Length: 609
Image (tube, rainbow, N blue to C red):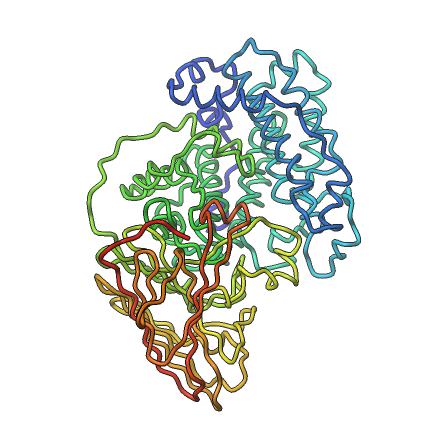
């Protein structure tokens, strides 16, 4: 798509000054002095927060902790704190042109002195034949560009762009050092290497890494003060090639199998790229009418439940941070009022943009892309069907059903083919536990030893005690969207011996969800159904009462409830307290036709756990 445009319309003249409205240099006092009092107050609070402590050490032992103990945080903690503090220091000197430059100097120097800008968890370029990570507990010292090397380059490029005149005047050696490091660690490797996995040459299974990295590298090139026209043209061509390869991996429906939280780094990063391409080519590169791009940019709206909740299949938080300003811009580019309104609801504050990974471009866009007034209509929430992703959202009365087919080889996969979640009046009742703090196990062959990734902790049956298995071959079949839900066959997701068929049907009405499961086995096998509940269940005369729902237990089934204290800090941001794992077991048979009716309770209890 993008490369084809360049073939038809070769572009060799670029207008970098158009980026100044996104990232105004400190000398543009009209831009900085015109900030609203509310935004300025947020900026001052952020500056004060990071001025209160020195730049932390990034140590060899912290880097080695990933191999030694599986900890990512030992390296990533100081790594990201350094970059957050530098962002805040740059912001301070732009807001206050007379402020001392020392915090900027110290931060830039610390980062230039690092042996690598790659984090410990990404020390190996994961291509076929790559060495084992365990063999490299310390930085490899090569020219590999990972997510955060690219993001670090972006932060230094913005620092040079906004404060370059002062840095060059006060300490020219640092200015030249920053240029050299950007050139040697980002610009040259991007132009001269083809083996980085996210480029799509050595691997075809691309994910958010590609647009996220490219969005930051485009900033590095188009803000680099001495990049010539030929280099910029080559960088643009390679960027478009890699983005096209990523777009080929994205389904036509625009669904993000990594979840709504990862839209920030996938569809949102694509938006970053398209915004930059449009600006530097003086509007010649525009793709807002392309159907796939429109679908990608609309995904957060389709995934929204309300009250801050989103569909959270895979490694997605139930209440993810959504970059609202990016959603707002997507709505403006697509001229979609509902998408703009979602952006307004999720704009958040400046600190949100760097609280996780420090995305300085997003912070600056939130500063200089003003909110808009928009009158939200009270229109009915719309049902959603993503046929390629095989995800369905149905809204009836005050109930919202989200269910999925797909396969167990998806990006950030959980073994969850056929799983679902149920919300009542915008609050979760039957849930997907979501994500946890990443460790060395998260993306290793031990991934499915983690409870939150296993089908035994999703809203699915266990067949003969067996769970679903990982891999693309473990998938849903004959998936159909129905007027009030979805039907699908999920037997292929299991390797349970003797399982002939497992058909699952969802039907939602204004007051209840009806779940039909038809199981056929070649011999009698025990089947147990799992329901992950937000609130403590209470068994009462064939019913299970939990929060705002009442589940009718089929005749003959026996139930147990297990409390799962939520101790992981990431999961606890979504589900403080406990989750509850309800299991319902049927007498052993060859065939089962289990019908679960989950009604909305008249008297709603809102205190989980």
